[in-house]
Image 1: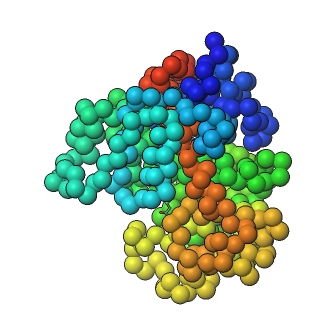
Image 2 (image 1 turned 30 degrees about the horizontal axis):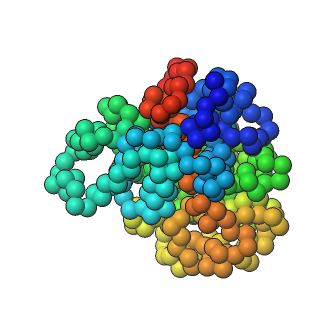
Length: 364
Ligand code: MLT
């Protein structure tokens, strides 16, 4: 059966980033490619075909965002609740815009002014929101693992919008989507991608390590030794026990011929004292400036998950310069989050007019 154009959750017609695609990723008229994940908690649970499915689906969703296809009714009547315990602009708003493009009933919970301030527990809040119609819960929390706890009891789908230092899966997926739109040939295999700065506190870096190494990129982590702690051990063990990456404090070695540089914010709110001698020294040694960027490949792109501290981890003229794709990352977040919402809702059996995909086991 061919699904109506406005109700698809599968991918659009675009080729996958490597050209190797799961059979009929569009999922229209033939069996849907397997998407077993009712929750998206991190990218570590995703196989490469599942990552490609998100990317292909996001390309399709991008046409809806651009107005080239009608608004989707995939989540019509489904309650999508954004529960953010930490500050956010781009992630929270893009989840809201994404859910609206899918015709969901969106609720945003402001922690300030809610019963959370009166000491309500996380699980009580979740049960309250579920009783009020939440079926997809998008949550951000300062404590690593908080969405995992909620996902054990919530009967719908949970999407992690950032937990502590641990994971930010939709950011990693939108970063990959953006990167693949820029690398010649649409493949990251062997391409040098540098993640620069406060890696220690970065959930973005951790989730990106899974997706970028799965895509075959040559990943380098660079920053002061104090902000790389623990990553040498991970690099030695390999991502997933096999996929290697490089950890260095040598900025020149990291930037040489890089195809992409992802600058990370210095996360002052999570920074213990003594990790940096001073912000001035950090800027002098690791700030991403135009002069330093000259060592990268001529087509190198500059990324940042935002919010940016211009003049700290990234110079203002680099942040808005010709190599910067920062605004494109933000815009791509909508299509990628639409894809994720549609896929998890489908796996949870929530989507209107959609057969829930066959569960293949190992569902999180
Ligand atoms: C995050 O939520 O982790 C952001 O996207 C990156 C940051 O806060 O620096």
